[in-house]
Length: 189
Ligand SMILES: [Zn+2]
Image (cartoon, rainbow, N blue to C red; front, side, top):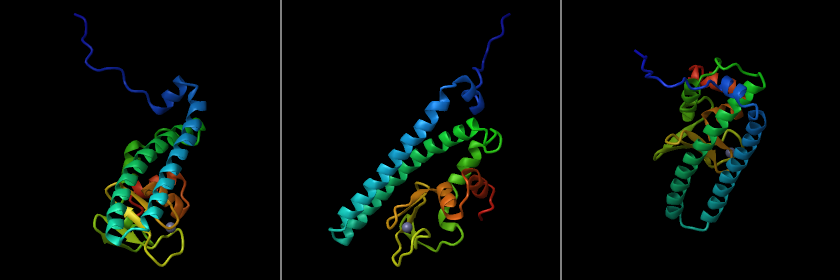
């Protein structure tokens, strides 16, 4: 009796993908550049929207602000997911990282780390958001915003934004890998 195959072929590992598709060497760096441009244009649009909002009354501005944060959170989250994946592939290609060092699970755990609880930040809860002084530029008002729903941060003063991994890269000078270890390994808490 012939054996009935119940499972499909195993999905390729990242290393196998790179071996199987040599053109990845060319495509991946180009894709990283593309996503960086998209990321910048999202942030530029938000900055422009905030500027335009300055002419309106505080209530209207607050509603617009919430909306912008929601959309920004979702978009940045999606963009950063792509960038994270591409960076991992690129590091693998460059021999900078072996596949087993950082797992997707670790990256997920690092990304969902609550930024507002990190050292050196004094955040106040404002609705679903947290606000506080920006650690990246000097200011008196609280432009630095953490949006836990989208798992990211954005500063309306200096325009810096991203997920928890990007935050610890910027704040502590970590490499991507160090940031993931720091956040996923519980060292941050
Ligand atoms: Zn700032």
